Length: 377
Ligand code: GLN
Image (cartoon, rainbow, N blue to C red; front, side, top):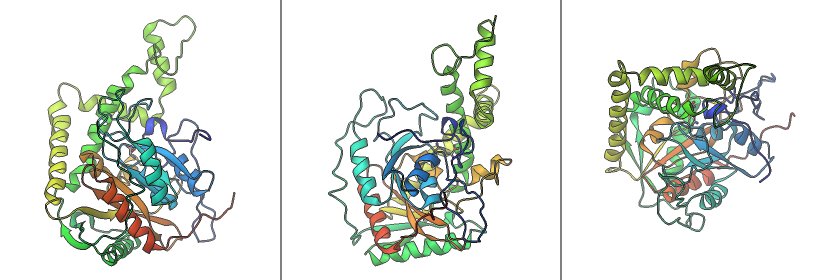
């Protein structure tokens, strides 16, 4: 273990800018001759940047709604969120417990497989941990996809999709075909409800999980002179939670409140079930799904901080697999016109990390992604 890396506070964010310590800067720069500082993705922006800058060969992350995959995509590395329950969350601060899952980020697919094998396995200390043997994912790596069907979800072709993203996705399709896979068009009809459902369920669970940070037992304690218990709660929570975390606690508390519970939380849970069913139906037609990881390349630091909704929109392709608990991986898919890396996402059936890694490897072998962040620092 070399050290700890930065992340968005309580893993809430897509750019590292909500970190208590201030954000990490991506090692990448646009090719426009400018020097604009770019977001390293989030919440695992410290991990993504450290790997992309070659400070370490691999790092861990947690992925509640994309925090392994989106930062990996932003800096041109690989990252896999395994099936919900594969890796123990014991010792990890809970964000949204029904979604949180740990996984590795690394320079290539093989390193991800090695890391995942080391990280996965049953842990009686995590009640959601899967009591299953850990496959030998590295030994099982095989980029020959003959006999596999890969689904292309038509709902992910959003109106106004970035043309570089669309072109990279087409390249990904061609590479998987070249690896022997059969490509089929599929439909995930409830995709457009995934992001709103996620941004109800995740804050709801977060507001409950974060209730324990009141200064009594966990984390920070702010006990002003002469303060009573209520004052300590208030001071601790005011000092310990940044603006984004407070926003989530307020949204979560609101959607769980007596008058609105059914309208928001129950509704979102139903949508979640429909999204999981979309995938179940898709598996009747295909073994894997290919999509972009994020709708854009890395954006500039400060570009989205005043508009939380546009920040949330960056998670649009990542959250469906999280809501369904499925394994999903991002691998570098190319470079856009600005010279920035883009990620391709592979989603697999529950417990089929091997299938996901193998498709990731097939892409890696064909994408020829060798670009590295320029050493400007
Ligand atoms: N960007 C998403 C959010 O802010 C995902 C975060 C995560 O996966 N930890 O909720």
